[in-house]
Length: 339
Image 1 (cartoon, one colour):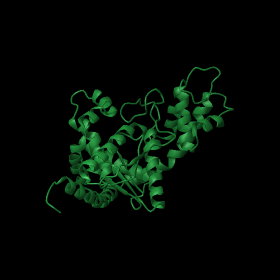
Image 2 (cartoon, one colour):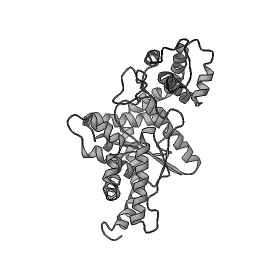
Image 3 (tube, helix red, strand yellow):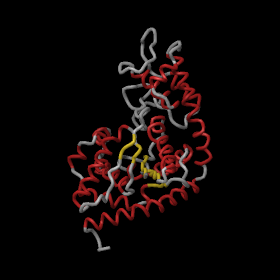
Image 4 (tube, helix red, strand yellow):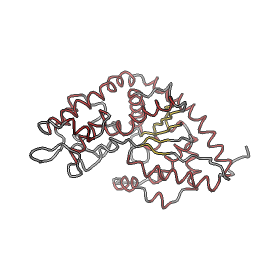
């Protein structure tokens, strides 16, 4: 088994990132090790430059993200952890895969439509081309599985289409590129804003009070959850229900923290006096889950040299794998010298 996933070094990572992606990475690392496979994780700084950004902040956020991933449980000695821009094979593969990517497919990407609407000065071609680079990121490593959040499902489907189209056109009966399967968590795939449970918790678009950050102090986590939107039912009803978005979101968070189903989380609160008990239970569970990560993060983040050395070691390992895939793709496409 070979697992790959990437994470952007933008903004502070929030509870939705942690439950939907980061915790999946740690689980994937363990499953790959048990199965004699390999887990590969990439901090995708090239994706981050498709929208307006500050160069100095990007470098710092890259170190922030690397430190957070390691604090959460990724072990650079047990997986490959690297920075995207250190592996030029991925960007070259992106251009080669453009030849089998339909313009119409890119034009239908929900994420492009949503992000382009927020760009006031420039909607970059990079933002439009984002899914092709994402496909190259994954296909370069011939992985079997991609842990992602629910919002990336469409991109994974496009990635599979690109791989299959490439194999059909250039593979000569061989599966040169592997179509990976996505792995989306059963619980917590979409954590919503605490103040606006109609909207997903977001690094950039969510409200400050509605977003729990992985590095928030316990008292701040409690305050945000105490102010979380529920509803006006009297008496209060703690249950998963499409008409009870705020309550359902809190139950999703509680279930994800405790590794149970949302219905089981609701059952545990059958004797609750009201929504205050629900919020208190969620606060305790979130604080307990995030406390070890926050404590380890401070020590790891303080040593930027160690982080840089770790990322560069990971890039060397990643380049060895990606170079082999790129050589096969170039050969099949008739690009470059005969080799």
